[in-house]
Amino acid sequence: MYLPLNTSVKISGDGRVAVGEAPAKNSKPVRLINKDEVPVFVRGAGRESREVHNFGVPESLDADRFIVVEVIVPSGNWSGIPPHKHDTYTEGVESNLEEIYYFEAAQTRGSDSVNNDPYGLLRVYASVEREIDVLEEVRSGDVGLVPFGWHGPVSAAPGADLYFFNIMAGPDPDRSWNITDDPNHAWIRDTWHHQDPDPRLPYQS
Image (tube, rainbow, N blue to C red; front, side, top):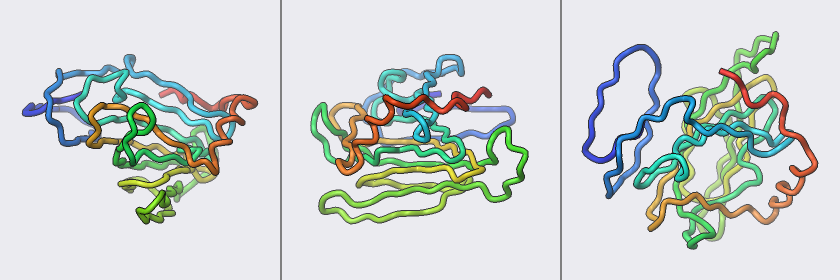
């Protein structure tokens, strides 16, 4: 559910609720997005396959400022690849968006093995003059902050499926999600044309 400025809501029932927010200037319509309305697709190919739920992107949601997605990375796969950035606004080329990851990790679906410590990895590193250097294990409940810089990959360790709730927002005059690939790794996209998507995806709930 999308709520604009100066709006309150009461939710009752059982379950977990994730709340993503960002400063806004313009009020947009309240919007309830049902499960069957959420665009779901597989991005990448081979071991770079991941499942993306694009319910909060500009094409799906009329919001003022933020962009919100969910991503599922199967065991052994890589997301956020090639590493990329969106920290310098150039109209139509690159957006200036800070990014937050909220992670959940679980034993691989369909596995008979017991994994008592499912986890993934998050990498963030410097672009141009602003220093940042992050390489961390991530587990359920962890939050990753990307104020700027190249980021990726986010990888799921063997035996662990990784989920993340992704929120992006920034000061740009337009609400867009344009990225620049790290030129040292941009070639990875070309390899997807010769591979099939991971057959485990999309996951069925």
